[in-house]
Image 1 (cartoon, helix red, strand yellow):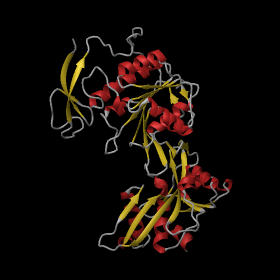
Image 2 (cartoon, rainbow, N blue to C red):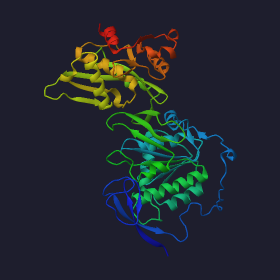
Image 3 (cartoon, rainbow, N blue to C red):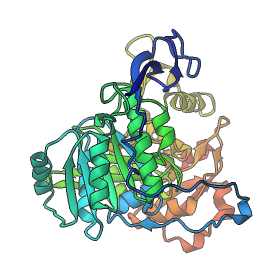
Image 4 (cartoon, rainbow, N blue to C red):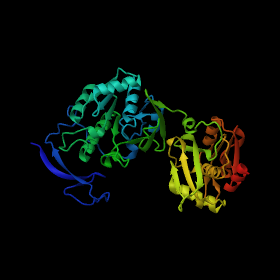
Length: 457
């Protein structure tokens, strides 16, 4: 006979309590505890290892006795996904992919699964029927004899199918739809999400099978379910973008096997997601003539150099308080740059409305675009266009000085590859580069005022 008890879980962090609490002692959130009925089976019939041999007990060993080995990675036939994962799919890894509804999470993993022709892939769907998945695969115009579809939400039945099929990769769509018989709560609740993810993690680690989990997000943009879900998995990928725009960004927020600063860029088409190998071309708009307030900044996302178009609009403030409206850039840093322009360069920014936009819908945190932003703002304010063959890569300090940026050679190389003729950088980067090797003209300056005099005269 199964024994049941009532437990209260914090819906924000997953903290467990025997009684209801107004304030969570773990994350200090108020009124987040929800009651769940937990059923403990006398014999663990839902353990996926029920037919396997008894697991051996691990013994403590010193670090010198442990063989480091190498991570076994498998190419996903998707260069953007490989880059974001750190070089490929790691055996036994648990990857969580989150994003807004309709952004393309299911399409991305379905497309990746169909491209793995030599691997046996099991796609478990709790949201769509087999016919819907077949229709989506037909739109992708791709097929594979090793791609299997299972429409199931009970973890016991899923593990039974996995034992019979022995897949090389498992895709779960989505973790919020799974249900474990060990808990009496409904699918998608805090306890169910944590329990199902724990079972999937146990399966991935003991069989060295990569598992991809698709996760829903809340209205605040956070992954739905307990915060412990993100701690359990090896990699957390965020699929971002506007559903009304064509481009999508796959960003790493956690990665135990690689860098967390890599991004992958896709374009959503009628027949699936297209990899964008040269994102600088889509981030720089095509226009007939030079416009004021438009400059090009050289930034980095992980190991990938990007040239992004920065658009500014400066107009006299119609009301008492001037507006500061950045899109894709930090609001506080924009205020700092405007203060530098007024204090160090003498421009009256206190009476101007300033609107700033990063073209292409991308968000940038790299301080190397500071110089491009300052030039863009003054270009719009003075109605003087800047040549579209010029780009900028320098950080602006509070004293109006141009500070050196890291990996400037990659930025120069990317600008040269895209046909730019001039690039403005800090003179303090001079020691780390060889100007003679570059075909592009590299201009070195130490002060923001010197750049203004060179460009605007």
